[in-house]
Image: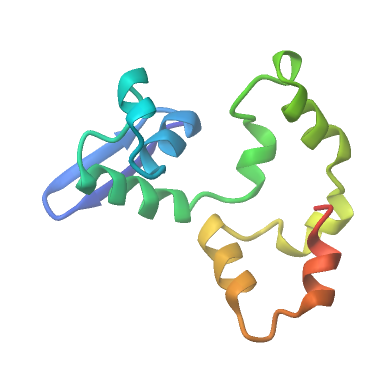
Length: 116
């Protein structure tokens, strides 16, 4: 699945979730050396806007690093609590950010969500 965002008259396409995440990340010299950094601040902003609209479920369906080759991915997948995730499963990345930053979100809500 590819991700597209238009800013003004320019359209940016990110072919994979992995490339979208790389382009949305803060500017780092290592990312430039690896050839995965956004080419401009405008591309980085487009990636961040696009990332905010990605459903949270996508991260479960499309792990950035294959389960078979990464211990951290395996740990996350194996310990993920779908029941704890259920209340936010329909949210996007931006929607989760808004919920986490909401004044009404208290310690109990965060604790209940932690394993999800």
